[in-house]
Image (tube, rainbow, N blue to C red):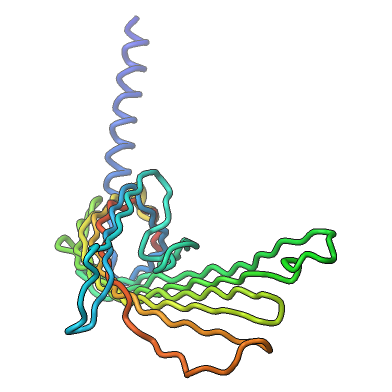
Amino acid sequence: MKLHRLALSVSLVCALGSIATTAEAARVAPKGKVRVHLDTEVLSWTHGRPYYDPGEAPDPANPRWNVIGFGAGRPVTIDGNPIGGASVIALGVGYGIHRHLILGARFGMNLSHSFDRNNDPNDDENDDSQTSFVGTFTPYLEILPIAEGPVLPFILVRTGFTGATLTSNDGPNWTRGGAMAPLLGVGFGAHAFVTPYFSIDFGLTFDYRWVHGVGRVGGPAIPPGPAPVWSRTAQSFTLAGTLGLSTWF
């Protein structure tokens, strides 16, 4: 019985020592380290409205749209198509330029081409297709009030843009729409280090986007028209709770 108690005591001391060692090892100072990360949204709300030029009469119907999303592993809203559709999983890379600062950027792209075909030679849709592209680039700065520790709170400031195109081909004729959305965002959160090289990241972010659009048409059956002009079309904000994973080296 005494031997059993002794073994149990030794095991308990070893376990506590292991936990203490792990906690001590996880005290990370990000200065001089490279951070590679993926971020997802757990919960988000996006609200948008059309944009009106100064002096332009607003739509009496007051159109607006809301999108509420929930679920682990969802793509970050600001990385997706500004006018809806394709989403992007952006990869982030940062570097500790100062004991209280991490400078980095998130970037990603999605290119897809779709077409339907059948064996009916008289079906005009056999030469139709769609090609879409979405790209995002968002530089960011994290301000760390605490420069070293197992949990590092941060304040986030970011800006950047997401762009997208959608080209619909009807035989040799085509219609192409483009969108560009500059953004400005802020947030706060924390990096919780499991090991010195791996952290789970929690955050709450607010981003505002100004959506600009342009349309073009072309092909043998399309008469020449005026040159397309970019114009501001909408504005939206997204409030999101985020969950991410980071490696540090």
